[in-house]
Image 1 (cartoon, rainbow, N blue to C red):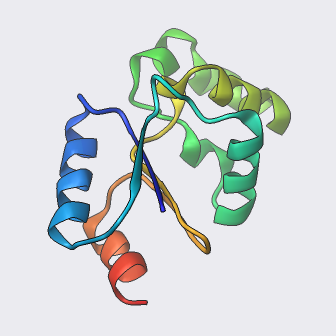
Image 2: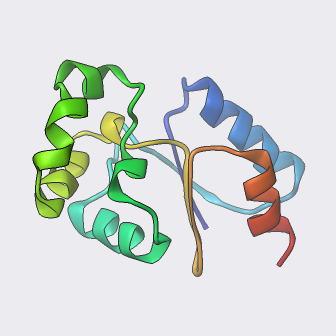
Length: 118
Protein backbone atom coordinates (compact mmCIF):
# COMPACT_ATOMS: atom_id res chain seq x y z
CA UNK A 1 0.00 0.00 0.00
CA UNK A 2 1.28 3.45 -0.92
CA UNK A 3 0.88 6.32 1.55
CA UNK A 4 1.42 9.72 -0.06
CA UNK A 5 1.97 12.45 2.49
CA UNK A 6 3.55 15.82 3.15
CA UNK A 7 5.43 15.21 6.44
CA UNK A 8 4.90 18.73 7.94
CA UNK A 9 1.12 18.44 7.34
CA UNK A 10 -0.69 17.86 10.65
CA UNK A 11 -3.42 15.77 9.00
CA UNK A 12 -0.77 13.57 7.38
CA UNK A 13 0.93 13.16 10.76
CA UNK A 14 -2.40 12.06 12.31
CA UNK A 15 -2.97 9.64 9.44
CA UNK A 16 0.53 8.17 9.74
CA UNK A 17 0.06 7.75 13.49
CA UNK A 18 -3.28 6.03 12.85
CA UNK A 19 -1.67 3.61 10.37
CA UNK A 20 1.16 2.84 12.79
CA UNK A 21 -1.18 2.35 15.77
CA UNK A 22 -3.33 -0.06 13.76
CA UNK A 23 -0.37 -2.01 12.41
CA UNK A 24 -1.14 -1.20 8.79
CA UNK A 25 1.93 -1.66 6.57
CA UNK A 26 2.66 1.01 3.98
CA UNK A 27 5.32 2.56 1.79
CA UNK A 28 5.53 6.29 2.52
CA UNK A 29 6.18 8.83 -0.22
CA UNK A 30 6.67 12.57 0.23
CA UNK A 31 4.15 14.13 -2.14
CA UNK A 32 6.15 17.36 -2.45
CA UNK A 33 9.50 15.73 -3.24
CA UNK A 34 8.07 13.01 -5.47
CA UNK A 35 4.72 14.21 -6.75
CA UNK A 36 2.46 11.73 -8.53
CA UNK A 37 2.78 11.44 -12.30
CA UNK A 38 -0.10 12.24 -14.60
CA UNK A 39 -0.40 8.52 -15.39
CA UNK A 40 -0.58 7.59 -11.69
CA UNK A 41 -3.17 10.28 -11.01
CA UNK A 42 -5.28 9.22 -13.98
CA UNK A 43 -5.22 5.59 -12.84
CA UNK A 44 -6.08 6.48 -9.22
CA UNK A 45 -8.85 8.84 -10.28
CA UNK A 46 -10.38 6.19 -12.56
CA UNK A 47 -10.17 3.48 -9.89
CA UNK A 48 -11.51 5.68 -7.10
CA UNK A 49 -14.86 6.51 -8.65
CA UNK A 50 -14.52 9.97 -7.07
CA UNK A 51 -14.91 13.30 -8.86
CA UNK A 52 -11.54 14.63 -9.99
CA UNK A 53 -11.98 17.76 -7.86
CA UNK A 54 -11.64 15.55 -4.74
CA UNK A 55 -7.98 15.03 -5.67
CA UNK A 56 -7.26 18.77 -5.36
CA UNK A 57 -6.05 20.28 -2.09
CA UNK A 58 -8.67 23.04 -2.18
CA UNK A 59 -7.46 24.59 1.07
CA UNK A 60 -3.84 24.83 -0.06
CA UNK A 61 -1.95 27.99 -0.94
CA UNK A 62 -1.08 26.80 -4.45
CA UNK A 63 -4.75 26.09 -5.23
CA UNK A 64 -5.80 29.53 -4.02
CA UNK A 65 -2.94 31.47 -5.65
CA UNK A 66 -3.73 29.89 -9.04
CA UNK A 67 -7.41 30.79 -8.71
CA UNK A 68 -8.43 27.19 -9.37
CA UNK A 69 -11.83 27.53 -7.71
CA UNK A 70 -12.96 29.47 -10.78
CA UNK A 71 -10.76 27.73 -13.38
CA UNK A 72 -11.35 24.03 -12.63
CA UNK A 73 -14.97 23.87 -13.84
CA UNK A 74 -13.93 24.92 -17.36
CA UNK A 75 -10.74 22.83 -17.58
CA UNK A 76 -10.58 19.54 -19.43
CA UNK A 77 -9.89 16.39 -17.39
CA UNK A 78 -6.43 15.98 -18.95
CA UNK A 79 -5.57 19.61 -18.12
CA UNK A 80 -6.58 19.05 -14.50
CA UNK A 81 -4.50 15.86 -14.28
CA UNK A 82 -1.49 17.62 -15.81
CA UNK A 83 -1.88 20.43 -13.28
CA UNK A 84 -2.05 17.98 -10.37
CA UNK A 85 1.05 16.21 -11.67
CA UNK A 86 2.92 19.51 -11.93
CA UNK A 87 2.89 20.22 -8.18
CA UNK A 88 2.41 17.71 -5.36
CA UNK A 89 1.13 20.51 -3.13
CA UNK A 90 -1.99 20.73 -5.32
CA UNK A 91 -2.87 17.12 -4.49
CA UNK A 92 -5.20 16.37 -1.57
CA UNK A 93 -3.34 14.52 1.13
CA UNK A 94 -2.89 12.10 2.60
CA UNK A 95 -3.59 9.79 -0.29
CA UNK A 96 -3.59 6.02 0.21
CA UNK A 97 -3.41 3.72 -2.77
CA UNK A 98 -4.12 0.03 -2.31
CA UNK A 99 -4.73 -2.77 -4.78
CA UNK A 100 -8.50 -2.34 -4.71
CA UNK A 101 -9.07 1.07 -3.08
CA UNK A 102 -8.04 4.73 -3.05
CA UNK A 103 -8.46 6.91 0.05
CA UNK A 104 -8.30 10.68 -0.40
CA UNK A 105 -7.86 12.73 2.77
CA UNK A 106 -8.00 11.35 6.30
CA UNK A 107 -11.31 10.27 7.77
CA UNK A 108 -10.72 7.71 10.54
CA UNK A 109 -14.04 5.89 10.07
CA UNK A 110 -13.53 5.59 6.30
CA UNK A 111 -9.98 4.34 6.83
CA UNK A 112 -11.16 1.87 9.47
CA UNK A 113 -13.87 0.49 7.19
CA UNK A 114 -11.47 0.15 4.27
CA UNK A 115 -8.23 -0.90 5.95
CA UNK A 116 -9.30 -2.89 9.01
CA UNK A 117 -12.55 -4.56 7.97
CA UNK A 118 -11.22 -6.62 5.07
